[in-house]
Image (cartoon, rainbow, N blue to C red; front, top):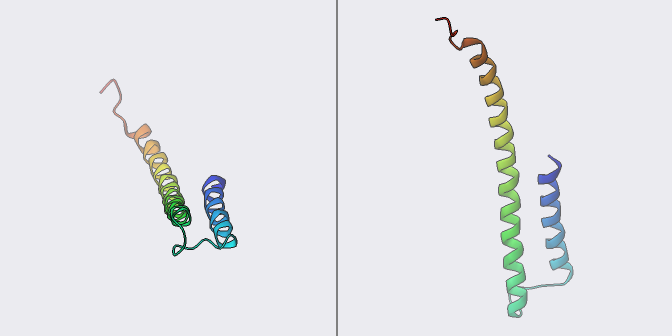
Length: 78
């Protein structure tokens, strides 16, 4: 879980840098581009975090199913 937290923290750090640099969407084209890129990174970071949570849930489900399948598989003698 450290990686998804790390990407969100890095995204927040970039947002803080942009705020500290006083980048504005109303200023030059470079500032607009950087802010748009940071918005995109924010969205990606949130999606990665959500996907990681879902993958962990699915992994738990697969583990519980594999235990059931191990004991309910037909015997080769049947």
